[in-house]
Amino acid sequence: MSHHVSHHLSRRLTALAGGLAISLATLCVWLTLFAPAASANKYCGGQHLSNFEYCRGVERNLTGVEGYGEQHSVCVGIDAISGHCSGGPHQIARFVWGEVIFTDPWIEDNAKGETVVYGETF
Image (tube, rainbow, N blue to C red):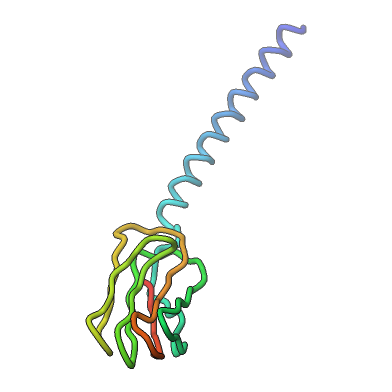
C-alpha cells in the first residue's frame, strides 16, 4: 500500500513541477514582450541654472538625453557618465546611450552667468 501512495505522490509532484515550469516560461515571455521601454519625458524644464550648475531629473528608463539653454550652451548626460555639450544658445546637446538603462538624466549650464534650460529623455 505504501508503494502505491508514494507512486501516486511522485506523479502529482511531477505534474506540479511541470505546471510550474510552464508558468515561469510564460511569465518570462510576458515580461520580455511587455516590459516598459524608454519614452520621451521632460526634465528640468524652465529651470534657471547659473555658473556651471547642474539640474538632475528623476530616475527613469531611457536610451538617451537631449536639451538646450536659452541664453547659452548646456551639457547633458546620464548618472555619472559624461555627455555632450551644445554649441551655443538654443542649440541641442544630445547624448545617446543606445540601450535602455534605468538612471537619472542631467543638464548643466555650460558658461558663467544664468541660462534657462530644457531637458528631455528618450
